[in-house]
Length: 501
Image (cartoon, rainbow, N blue to C red; front, side, top):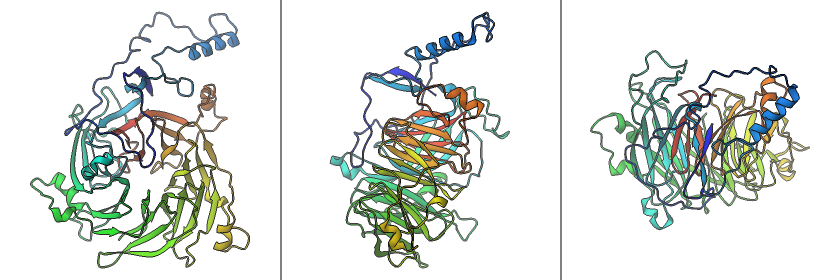
């Protein structure tokens, strides 16, 4: 998964909300991972000595004890998850043999929130070099707020790792496997830091025209900006297209919030566009697109959280239901049809801030959450019941503490992102403030033969599939059309696919 190397500079700590990182080196074209050196390249090349278990005449227990000691005393070049601790001045480098694809791409300023845009290149594609489209918001230094922008981006030339023989690859795969990755972008001036950005697409009535792609940007200024980035996306693939200053202006500016916020989500069940936004005062607003193309914000806020709303998500199956996570340690479930604007369910899921949340698209009674203590958990919403009496008011007054389906405290810093695999309801991606992105398989059971093999490694749950190093890891998303591919952001963008997913 990763190998440990020395670095001259001490590793930076994770960003918390409101902190602004320093500027990074600008790479207008691309920033590939470059050449990898495998320091263990020759370790297993010799076939002169092959010793099978038990043939050395020693008792199995004695041999197994020695093997365990060998693991404990692994050399300084090998990082064992759950065992090895990085020393000051050390960082991690990837082991290329564990990746099918791995590229890093830099932007002028860190983009600590982004979204992946669905495109017209096809679903379930496996052609390399890969192409994808994203949108992100920058976090420029506070002294250079005017440098902030929304970046509409096209990543192309994303080739496989050299020597990878992925059996799933298409017969139509391009011969240009060694192409360098390219980052093209169009900038929309913003003049304020982006806290979180999410995209939504409305299908076109004309099959020959692309869908309309909208973005909602929660900002440090307390305003929420809605932009139409359709012309920016089209400009990448239509030579000579110029995006006009008018097209950079927001379609709508939501001014209902009196404090900045981090919670925003578009409904997947309202094609025209229905938006939730939550702020640090604990207030949640709904904004709906009208038949005429404008936007109307209901100024009657949903209230119930006693602290900031950190995450909001619409139900993937019920058009009027949404959930919110808060730094008050609760997750609350709401119905937009409620005249009382109070939660229908309130569950205490943590004793610290609940930073992020993800609703499974495949099994919609499952919800994942991540908190400030580094714990992420899975909840079965069928076990969450309103308080006696059944009224929303009674439910909001009684805070219940449910039991999770699964809970993991592998990460020792705050969870910064959690997302279910788009087609596999057992796979989850998690990013954390310990500069890592981890992949998990909830289908692995403790009594499986395979899990017993990994259970011997201290503090490593058998459900852990993979750990990817990402400096200042902030968000991770699965690509909905390229199976197994993830994009993570932090100090830079990382686009990767592992051999384990």
